[in-house]
Length: 300
Ligand code: NDP
Image 1 (tube, rainbow, N blue to C red):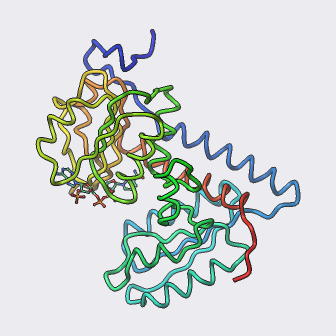
Image 2 (tube, rainbow, N blue to C red; image 1 turned 45 degrees about the horizontal axis):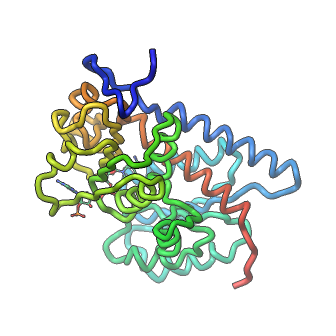
C-alpha cells in the first residue's frame, strides 16, 4: 500500500500513520555515537556537555537525568552543575562564565524554567553562542531567522527531522504553528519557512483558532493546553505534530491534540509520548557534537 500523502487524504477511519520519534531518535543517537567514537579514534577529545539545573523542580530533574543518560550512551561527557533554588542570578552568570572558558565543555545547557529571581534572557545571552546547544541565544535565533542557521533549537529541529523521515515536502504547503514561544513555536515557524512552507502562527489572541487549523496542511501544536486541538478541526490528510507534553491527574502523559480524534482525519501524526520528545534529546546530542566539531578555543 502506498503511504498516504498530503494530496491523497486517508479514506479509512484511523488511517493516520505514526511519526515514530522513538525509532528515529535511536537512529540519530546511534549516528552521533558512531561519529563521537570516530572523533576519539582520531585523537580528538570526547564532546562535553555541561548541564545546569537551578532548584528542585521535579519535571526538570527528570529531563536532566534523561539528557545525562543519553550523553553517556553516545560517548559524550556530561558535567552536572546544581544550584539551589535561592541561587542568585550573579552566581549563575559566574558559573556560565566559567563554563564558557572551559575547553572541556563544548555545550552549555541551562534547564528551564529558572526561579523567579533570575532573568532568563540575561542568562541565555551570557552563554557563548558557539556553546549554546539549546539554540536559544539571540544570535542563534537570529541566524535561523535570517536563513543561515548555526546551532538550531532542538525541539523544532527534531520536528523537521520527523517530517524529513516521512519524506514530507513542506514546499508550498500551508503550515500552522499553534504556540509562539521562543523555544518552540517561533523557531518552528522559522524552520518551516526555511523549508518553503507558507506559515501562520497562532497564539492566545488568535481569533477563531478552529478556522485557522482547518486550513493547515501541516499543523504543529505547542501550547501546553491538553487536548486543545479537536479532531474535527483537522484538515483531512494533514500532517499533525504535537509538541505538547502534559501530565494528567492520573500520572499519564498527553499532548495538546486530541489524538484519537485527530488520527481519524490526519495522514500522519506524532504520538505523545514517543513523538517529538525523544527527538528533542537526540537533537541535543547532535548539537553538542556539532559544537565540539566547530569549537575554536578562545581564551577569555
Ligand atoms: P509556553 O507556555 O512558553 O508557550 C505556549 C504558547 O502557546 C504561547 O505562545 C501561548 O500564547 C500559546 N497558547 C497557550 N494557550 C493557547 C490557546 N488556548 N490558544 C492558542 N495559543 C495558546 O510553552 P512552551 O512553548 O515552552 O511549551 C509548549 C508545550 O510543549 C508544553 O506542553 C511543553 O511541555 C511542551 N514541550 C515539549 C517539548 C518536547 O520535547 N516535546 C520541548 C518543549 C516544550 P501567548 O504567546 O499568547 O501566551
